[in-house]
Length: 555
Image (cartoon, rainbow, N blue to C red; front, side, top):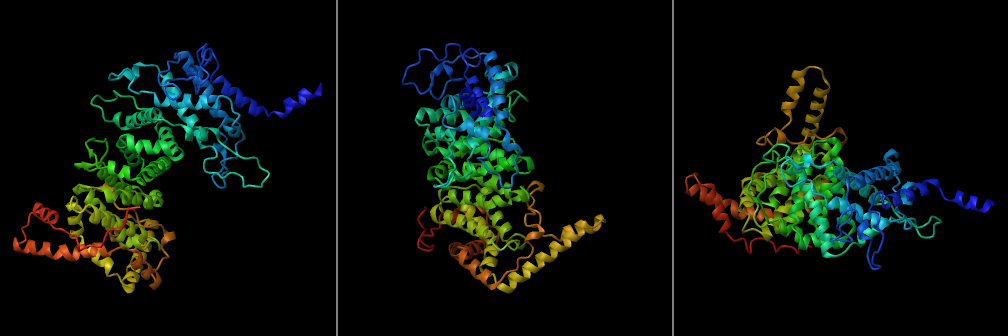
């Protein structure tokens, strides 16, 4: 009689709990309809009546819905999340994404109802309409149970899809069993235009709800969802794991419906230390999408919304919105966002060859970024900081070589800042060393003043720190002086040689040498009372064909 006992002992109790929880999520009469699994066709992907909402596996399904079912589902989802919370208590240093044995049991290929659970969770999230009854304040009249299930479902999806996401599978030849996450595999296997349209429409609706709820005529008339961060992560997981979904979004859907909320969330979270992770996800979404030509072309769609932010007003396209938001992220995002500067500029570089007509505001912001990154305070803060300047020059080159005719505002802004480009082109080693030493002296002075007690000393030191963005308001003040760990860099001959080789200045300098004198002459002929519109008209009617280098292929 010992054999059955030994067999039971071999089955870990935690695994039994996880599997029982996953069965409970589809228990007839408790979390799904009593007849949910009866009379289902054999070729069905999943039992349609066992789904929690119509969508994947049954767009026309009519599963049972009631407050009692929602409450039961919410409690079982809380149990599943409690079983999966081990990573919350792990140290960030040396974190192993495969370490949780609870999640290993939940995401193994033998996990019960895996496909049904993925589809049910995705459906209940993407089918949710936060407007409630479709009337102002309708969301306040409806029950909270459906919204609670949506929030818990979004959390459960993120937890299950994140397990093992950044880890590596065991090397071949090792004794460790092969690892997998069945939910990541199932998400990557979703296909079909109708399924993708359903997922896109749901995610776009929920993400746009965040700014729409703050932008209503009647205050508080639209309920704002609380799980928008999980929805954003879910969008990222879909783009990352399912290439067919990413392609469908870019080709068949209005991708600008994602760009607006992603930009809004990034902008709103830029100063909040608790939302640094959210800003990273927003950046990765933009970076992922900007690598595709269709995305950059779609950004030429006119931007007509008014977000509830303090962004400058402009009339232009969604490309202008991205530029204005990323400029604000740099100048007022703080040191925590410094590691993302390269990503911000790469996004702008990817979309620049396709930007047909940048607005005046976006053009000025781009040149303002160039002034900021070429200032001694930033350029000499670290040895590799000239890479930011190289990306900005690449942006200017792409616009000038591919979209010159429609971007007179940017060309004029560049010509007006000719001295900045000339100074970079004529940079010498003695000049670089002098600027770096002066920067270090200002940094030390400012640090000593900050450590002092007397306020006047600190104020005097603050006044000595140059401000490269005087014309911006307080919310767009330049970043604070670099942290002390970056202060030891001193330019060398090798550094200057590398900078000269890596900065693509030739196109800009040819443009300035050709247009600068002509605009000066035009201004002199009009007795220095030249109207700006006349200059823009002159730039539009001037051809640069044959004067600029042949543009490189876009890859």
